[in-house]
Length: 161
Image 1 (spheres, rainbow, N blue to C red):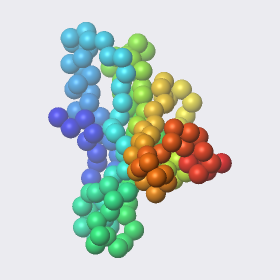
Image 2 (image 1 turned 90 degrees about the horizontal axis):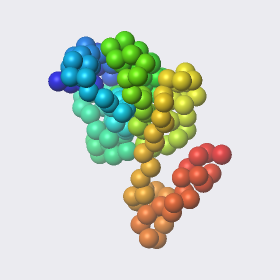
Image 3 (image 1 turned 90 degrees about the vertical axis):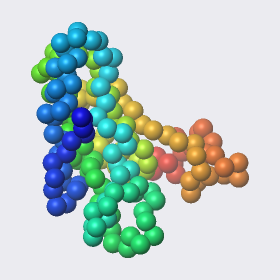
Image 4 (image 1 turned 135 degrees about the vertical axis):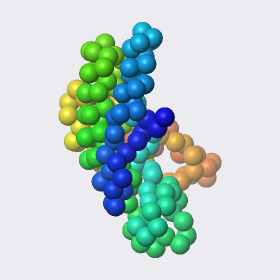
């Protein structure tokens, strides 16, 4: 079962989430009278890219050495907004208002290129809990210790303010 089933498009960034298989899971949850605390659509959608030429997927942060053309995000921030809105509607349709929280957007990476457009565009009340993945691992901003200090997540170099 592929709960992250997407339409097939020539431009991968224009794909849309398809709910049919997820709806099967929701029907099963309802039939068993399970209680689910929260639902989350995907994991780090802004970090998955594809090459324009061969359509092969890879991490946006670590493109293959032979990738010279611009890469496309598999799910754009604006498409993720539409997908999360649809995701919540499907959950409420099958399980009602007490279906558990909708959690997301489960993003990591630069705030200005993916996360900010998502937060600026998501309709109020769509998400019950906001999530953001912050990694202390070594990146371009790593210090001598090989990790980012805890206050880095609120620093101007990270938030862009």
